[in-house]
Length: 163
Image (cartoon, rainbow, N blue to C red; front, side):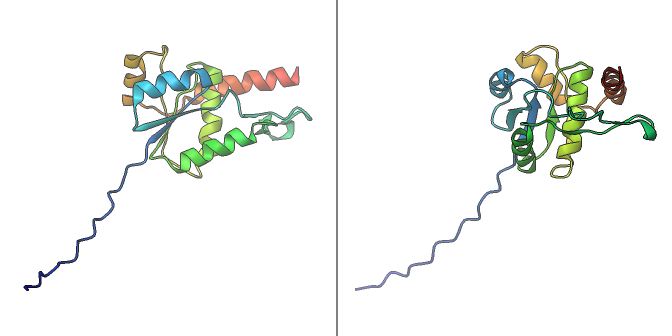
């Protein structure tokens, strides 16, 4: 009887799977449609509106320091923010796709500041309609957060609180 030499099987190196990009929208109703448009290379989550704002229990504005707003996580929104942080940490990048107005820009700015410590690769995308073309075009053309819109929203919010 001849003995067959058995060569040990070569171990296959695990293929490194690219992390999906995280897209954050404001409304949970938009996540499913946008997710279908973007496919498996993206994960779509919702902020469910504002997560960070001035506190309700105090003025929340440092009048002595050039009317600096003192932001906090909105009560009851800590879990959502924590989930978004975890998702951002496990993503290749974060695309902030909140509404294309000054409130949406401010939400993106707050999210960007809150998520930057776990994923510094953060961009803003904007679309005016929930269509495949509009969403794909937005993803191809990310931009920086528009601080003029953020400043506009902050000024309105501070004035509302002072008045």
